[in-house]
Image (cartoon, rainbow, N blue to C red; front, side, top):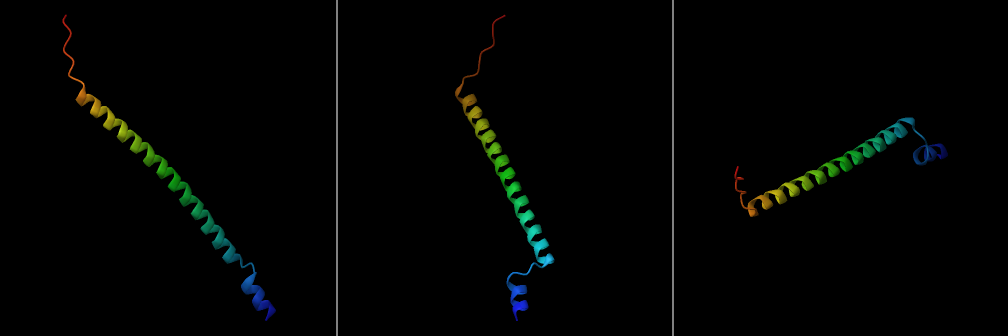
Amino acid sequence: MAKALLGYVGGSDPRLLAEMRRLQKRVQDLESELVRIQDENDALNAAAQHESLLDSIDIDVPQAEPALT
């Protein structure tokens, strides 16, 4: 009975440990990818706002007249 409880509670099954390590690595990889995608999204949003700002400035500024030569 003690061996059964030890195996169930605290035994170190190599397959279980390997699967746990694999899953922990996968979670770390996904978290890294999430941070990278969030940074990329923030950069794209900033570029879109900058472009929008430039477009609004172009509308408000009258067209320049050609210089006399």
